[in-house]
Image (cartoon, rainbow, N blue to C red; front, side, top):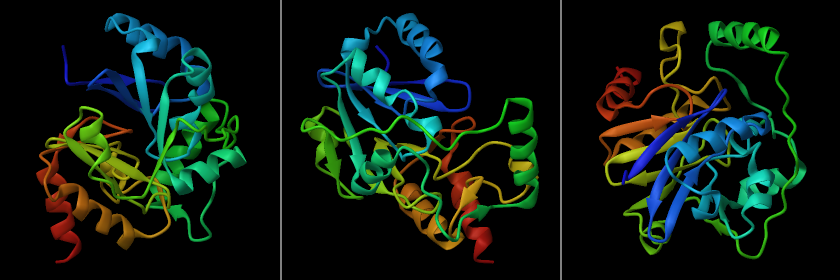
Length: 237
């Protein structure tokens, strides 16, 4: 049995991790990804009831769009999220930071073209209210994951959004949108498409790379952490 596995949905990579009493899902894609998601876990021999935990890296709809569907199909699943994420989910739409901007003008152009070809993007999603069984955590937490059978820790990794958190399992980091590995040649390599402060992103990268060998983002393929360390060093030169 695998320790972790990637599922690629329409816009987002989600990850399934082996936990003590089942599985943990990291992010859950858009609402329209339901059929693809269910087929993917069935191909792995996993039943939806075996999903014990759903870890949300942040509140954007391409990461939480299936949240209500999954909770409906498996009411016993426990959602793990940050306090800020919980408040944004109740609102049912993206929170856009006053300083939010594209990391590079070319990235904005790519997003605009993609949106036109795919019917646009929505910043709205079905609101979600945290239940008593869900687990709302501080930004940094090094005790929860071992209790769930996953040797690792949770890090607050803001910069893309204020509610962003990452999951470290061994020497692999599952980072949501804290790091991008998609169209890096178009400028601002590894920075999220959208961010509110580059320096905050860089500080998050330092935390992520402190003890990891592999970075697994929501957008793009997993890659060696040393590449992100090199990018960090270039920002200081």
